[in-house]
Amino acid sequence: MKLLCVGDIHLGRQPSRIPPAVDEALGIANLSPAAAWRRTVDYAVEQDMDAVLLAGDVVEQEDDFYEAYRDLRAGVERLTEAGIRVLGVAGNHDVQVLPRLAESLPAFELLGAGGQWETRDLHREDGERLRVAGWSFPDARVTTSPLEGDFPKATDCPTVGLLHCDRDQSRSPHAPVRSRDLEAAPVEAWLLGHIHRPDSLAAPRPMGYLGSLTGMDPGEPGRHGPWCLEINPDGHLAIEQIPLAPLYWHTLEIAVDGLQEAADIHRRVTEALEALNAELETWNHGPAAVGCRLRFTGRSDQRHALERSLHADDPRTTPQDFGGRLYFVHDWRLDAVPAVDLEELAAGSDPAALLARKLQLLQGPDTTARRELLDQAREPLTQVIHDPRYRALAPDTPDDEVIARQLEAAALHALDRLLLQREHES
Image (cartoon, rainbow, N blue to C red; front, side, top):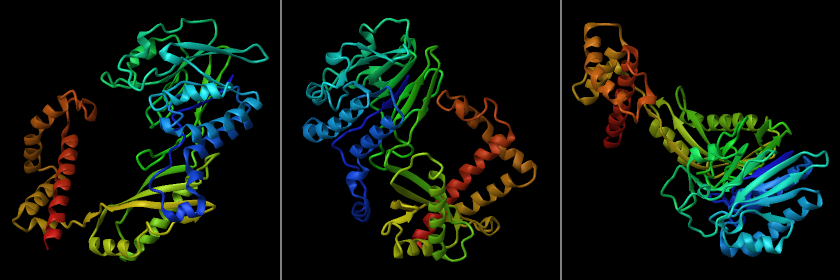
């Protein structure tokens, strides 16, 4: 049994932060959730899926009925003509409109209307059977867990749970559920909607958020798309995300270390985009457009020249085409810090000089002064490590090297801030 599982689509919404040049070249409609839905439908037909499951928030808002109806109907009709069933649940965004759409589209099977668990069985000609259990929002605000109700009992065939909810957020108004209750339910997989960042779903028992079908702004970076879930009669599962999103958001870190000329920063930008494109070329399916946030990091004594060069020839102004895929920069930030000459700094008498001398001690050989510095930091650092909030960040008993690394990182961070302040003041 092969299922294509789809998280939040939000039909009716348009992506943001798309430059006019990209809109003119590709058309913003071709980067929208509706475009992602069309790609998903095409893939489901090509791969001969048995069913497509929708985990809620299919529609952005209640007044998107007509636009959503057009897009959803076209997809559902194409799927059902290919013998593929379409099942879904309503989320908090489409609590009213999705039932109305289901009434207008009999081929779309809405599960759990009115906040009551409901199951549907899927059958194959070879006798293979699968049960889908679903629950839909009865109102836009639901403050109790859907799993407190009568969840369907275990059966003699594999069961998949389809739910729009807020996991481990007890005060959420969007159907809060606890992970332990999800784990205790008699299902082979949980396919969740609501959170747009996808979880790392994995066999043997996938349980988590499918993520939004496409990233609609820079706050939704990384791979997006439906998930292909295959279930064998013996209950063995395999799951894989299919990156069908037409729009991909990514942050590129570009080092400025070693630049001889400030203008060379633009060559490094192009090289970073080429490397990213080479990575995306390895995907079986790739985006039509890629929105990049650039972070320039490292150390350089040309920070002001770099900033002037980036403003004079702003990478945000002109999209670049690599093999038919359009790359655009929506934001950049110069996080590079001044180059540090510790020996020169240490000769002074200001706070920066004091930090430079401490860094020389930490980076130098094992001396009495270095050991005294480490011993002074051992007790307060141990207290921090033993705090339950930070226990996972370091070993229970820090050795000298752990302490030295922590002190060095803190000193460099403070020194960078002091040097930047000195640059701005001058």
